[in-house]
Amino acid sequence: MTPAWQLPGLARSGDLGLLLMRLLAGSFLIFQSQDNMFSAARMQVFIDFCRAAGIPWPHIGAPISVWCQFLAGIALVLGLGTRLAGLSLIPNFLVGFWFVHAAGPVPGWWPPLALVGMGAVLATVGAGRISLDHRLALLGDK
Image (cartoon, rainbow, N blue to C red; front, side, top):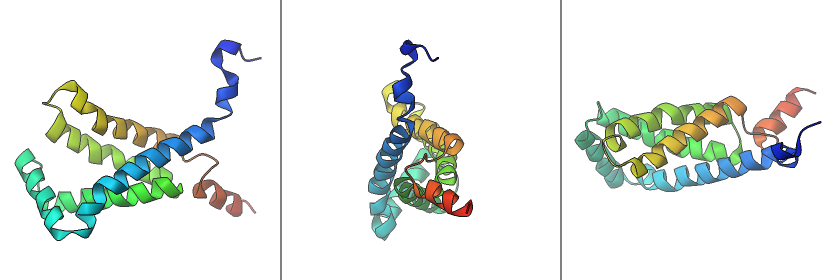
């Protein structure tokens, strides 16, 4: 029997927690990358920002980063390819942290490191039962 202090009722709601994490992270990623996705001028601003931050090969890395964020955001919202989407967040936001945020104040570390952490959780745990990943797995078992 699980002790009451471990809140066993909450454990049964883990899939809702994963859904909330996916929706929040995915919506954020879509929102913050869409302007660069659909505007060459905004993409150029991001490339210039990456160059100024000292990120190597910004003309290659910036578009890859934006595409990764946008597609990972869609994948997380849908719960489709969640492990791969989560995995893709880790290097993307570690680079952002290292080149942009690490020298700044600690509160600025939160956004990139939170996305690294969420990416690690979703890459290892998966999307949960409230996802297309789960539905497709059920279809594959038939």
